[in-house]
Image (cartoon, rainbow, N blue to C red; front, top):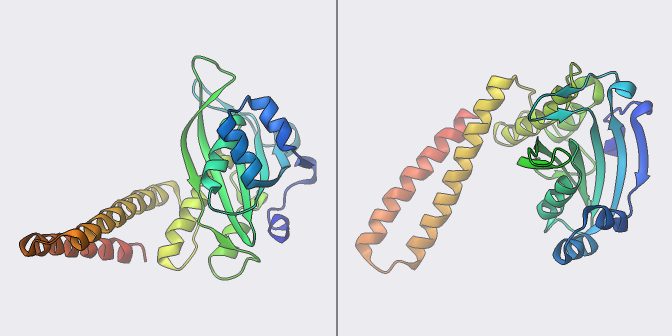
Length: 249
């Protein structure tokens, strides 16, 4: 796939090996519903690359809560995009190391990362703290946002002082991409600016949900007075939404 060449994965890190769905099922002791999800939704899983201190010259990171001694790239080809988040979450759960999922559904690309904490009851297992998904990108890549985003994920463009920084650099760029969907320009931002963007994006999602809820209430309401009150609330939320969107530009 053309976008893979833009990642500039070092030859020493390349694996490019197909992972049979049967081996995922056997190794993870999946339940019936998860087995069906893999069977119905997944076209192919490929182990693209593994970044380690001995092949990428990037130091490991370890403390009581987190371990970054390797970072793996997995190409996940799906039959459709309807359940991509469920499939991604399943793979992130069954593969305990820091994992970047390059999800392809037909002619679209999504990138997924996950913050995983060491399970204190079983240090061989991980607890997912959060999942981060990039917006779907049209393939082949083009434009002032999608193409620069993937180019910014080239190995040499990511932080190299530890595998934790390397991995979190990808997550940061996903947040930068989400912000670019509003601003119209893709820019790699520092940690503080990215954190502010994440907070604004979360508030925009909350407002969108609340606006959607109010619209449904207005539609179902039959009392004129109640409709007036709901319309006033809706207008205030829409103004807040517009202000935040303008602040991102």
